[in-house]
Image 1 (cartoon, rainbow, N blue to C red):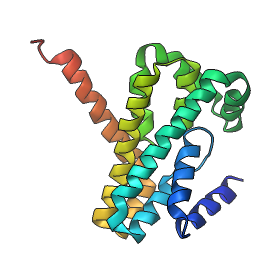
Image 2: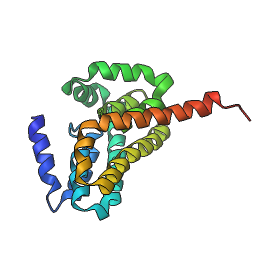
Image 3: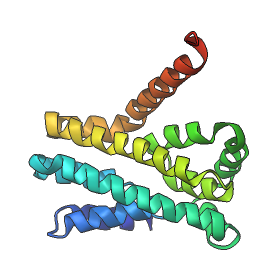
Image 4: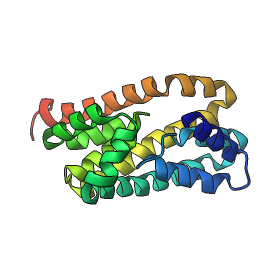
Length: 196
């Protein structure tokens, strides 16, 4: 089933309705769909580099709105829809770990997981189920999803096809390093710099 969904997603990249498909996939991936929008974003930017920022922005907005949908699933419908989504993807263990950590690390979890290809749907549903602050969740989602999609678009726009394989194989590594640097910067500012 996942392969069929992947093939369908890839076919959309070459269609006239590719931007609509990108928005739908980015929205759905944040709450229930298994395929990340990067598989559409990369070939679309390759095909039309002049529109790279438009595609990244569209992807970001749709992903954040979809994340709000995932949040609503966790907040209002966790025992029905939310639990089913988590179990369908076999993410029960990861979900329980996220939920338990939200009391102390909610913002950092959203920032780190939103940058990586680790299923963002787990973060959005867990945020809702934990009743995490909706404003903070939304702002963190904008920052983290925007950073990820604009970074992918920038790399493809600048380097073209040769960088595609690197992104597809090492996106997790690149975004994880970026997330560690981002969080490390906040930790330095918060705990290590002298207070004025």
